[in-house]
Every structure is written in C-alpha cells, then in structure tokens.
Amino acid sequence: MPLTMAKMGEENLIQKIGGKTETKRFLGNLGFIVGGAVTVIAEIGGNVIVSVKDSRVAVGREMANKIMV
Image (cartoon, rainbow, N blue to C red):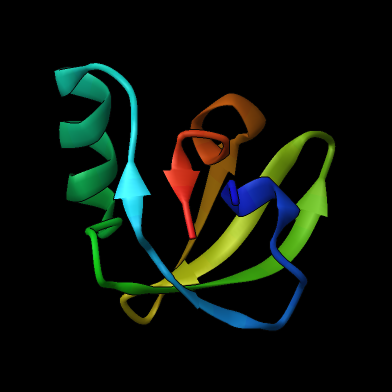
C-alpha cells in the first residue's frame, strides 16, 4: 500500500519506491530506501510528515504515493 494509507504512529518497512530515476534518487537522498523503516507522524495540508532514519521529513502527497510500504 502507498505511504499515504499507512496508519499514524505505526512503523512500516519500505517495500518499493516507484517513479522516475530522478524521483527515486531524490527520495533515496532523503533516506527512503527499500527495506528501511518509516513512520507517519502527521498529515498536514496534503503533505505527509514522516520519521525516517532518525529525521523528520515532509513529503508531498504525490511523492508519498510512490513509496510502497
């Protein structure tokens, strides 16, 4: 399921990252890698705030839909 459908506060493992090569590279630089843990902290104004690699990151809804957990 896409990251946007994950429950808040629940840790999930990233199964797949979709999109173009530059999108995958961008998300990888933020810490979104296959097999990595990600937790949804909040959803504000269409953006998803997540905890990944001991950091809090806000990603847009479109980007979050490319991250499968």
